[in-house]
Image 1 (cartoon, one colour):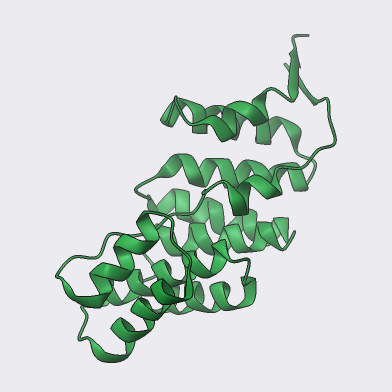
Image 2: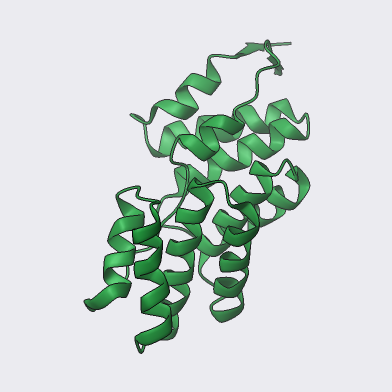
Length: 184
């Protein structure tokens, strides 16, 4: 099977604007939970980020919830394309709880947004290995990294996996339209 990309267009805009970020649910009430809900519904305004700041500064959080709050704040910063700040939050989350796949997936998304595809591919693969709540986003972002590294076959297969995991999700379906597959 030969897979060929028939356009040079890049999908990076879909990454940062299309919502391929993995927020985490944090329970227990308070500002950490409000931060979580803001991230989950797609907010990235300064007020929502401040909810996360206050939670991290003033609430007593279990390890997983503290890491999740850093991830959620990082997701909001990633949406704002504040890559360095987002990466710093994901680095802290990974240091606190290295087995939470969302930290790796989102740091990988930062690297892809910065066109550091090899770094992104590594983190995205690690996050997939650890397991995440929304694996379709991980496969989608990994496909973006693979395209950036000119590995069209791997990108095609990961876009396909994203569609398999979430059939109604438009971004990977749209990306697949750019490929042609020929059999040998």
